[in-house]
Length: 119
Image (tube, rainbow, N blue to C red):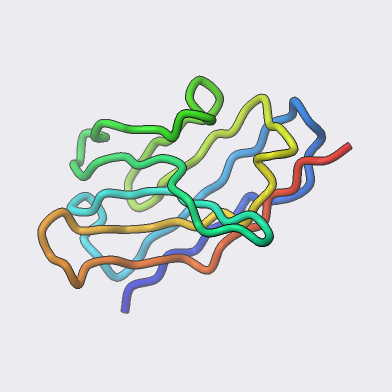
């Protein structure tokens, strides 16, 4: 049974930082692309960043609004999202995603962690 468990969300002031973690179990972690998505109240879920599969870390891609502020990384069975210079518009529920590059059935989601950026 595949499980993705996010943690690290919370309330932070504008300009602050948070680090989200997603611990994966029940899958061959290095074989999966790992991504972060977010969903703000009243909006659709949107892509934030992804790091490709591979035991050596993989390559990453970012949505334009988070480039140079957010950094994704992976180590063992965990994917991280370091978020710096947070803005109120970053407020959302953040979801971890594991997607196999070949197997269409290999697409899993975590339960989400809430991030609120407010003074």
